[in-house]
Image (cartoon, rainbow, N blue to C red; front, side, top):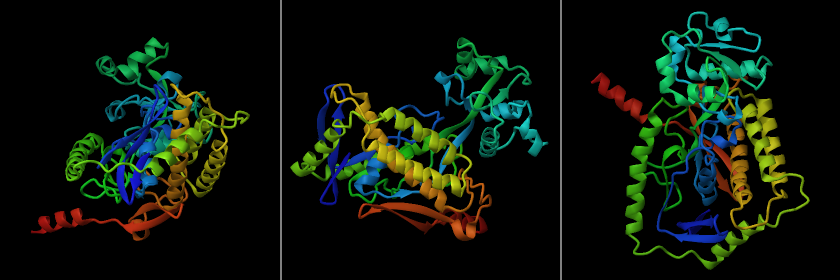
Amino acid sequence: QIVVDQGEVRGATAIDLQTGDFVVISAGSVILATGGAGMMYKVTDMETGSTGDGIAMAYRAGAELIDPEMHQFFPTAFVWPDTLRGVAVNSSQLWKLGLRLYNAEEQRFMEKDFPDEKENMPRDILSQRIFQEIQEGRGTEHGGVWQDTRWIENFEELRRDRARSYVWPVKLGINPDRIEVAPTYHFTLGGVRVNVEAETRVPGLYACGEIVGATHGANRLAGNALTECMVFGEIAGRNAALRAGRRKEADPVSARRMHEERERLRSLLKSDKKAAKRPGDIYEELRQTMYFDVGILRDESRLEAAVERVRELRESAASMCLSDIEQYNVEWIWALELDAMLLLAEIFARGAKMRTESRGAHYRVDYPETNNEQWLQHIVVRREDGKDVFMTEPVALTYLDDVKVRYEQ
């Protein structure tokens, strides 16, 4: 956790997984660069540490979240075999070259609605249409559609350049010409709110990279993620160092705060040994709920059901069973990550329900149009008196106005 005392950051606490010891790190500034929340979703191309725990840490410390409903998916990723689940299969280059998508009934479904463009469509639309086929019962055995590359000429060289997509399947006995694919969670667009100095509203707490929300608006152009990391990483690092340098030494974390946090962590090991569910069980149920109900195609009934299901899972998590050993206790880490994921899952779902329009990567089946008159707004969430408070703020288009002025001159 981030330690905040008397309204300012004092450092952070941690667990030494090797020994199980409680660790306190005193610091004049803290930078969060923990990435996105992809592991909250059943299919994702993010690595296993991308659980959104950094976003939750910032939020608990008093930071605001912005646009929590915004999440980006990539249309074609492996759903089979399990060892490759979530790994993106190809790039938009293949859609232009003649890649074809078929459902389980061997229908080329993109041709039906887009007879001219077929599969050569923006990836948001591809993701929506693929997911629709799966959701309406026309998906393949493992919950995807067929990606067929047999129609692409001179494909051998491109295959060699994309080992994950075409060499690995061969080694696993999969035909690389015909792969079961589905949309994969790709990028967390919403997240921690920071100012131009990369600082949250908590003095001394900075953030950069994918943990930060609203940098890309409602969608993200390919390649901009690395640019964001470089730009805001430098800003966060510089300002955090300057702030810490103004303090000759970090203020110590109070004994009271250390005791509270140590007891919170230790309490997880005193779980109900008769409980039916372990952290891994709840984790998988959450991922299923988020992918199908708070994923690509959203509507009010699904989002309401997701909020209720997440609340039920939080109740189950309060009495789940986990190993009580302290050294190398992976379940202990899962329990901590699960606590963060369940917190964020409800916020994500409630934000998506609140935005009654479609915009960028956020698509509401029951509100398919973009509504600038009502929803050219950010959704901002903060914790007040133990409750999640949702509010809206107008989107500032100062950059666009500046460009317009310079153009007219």
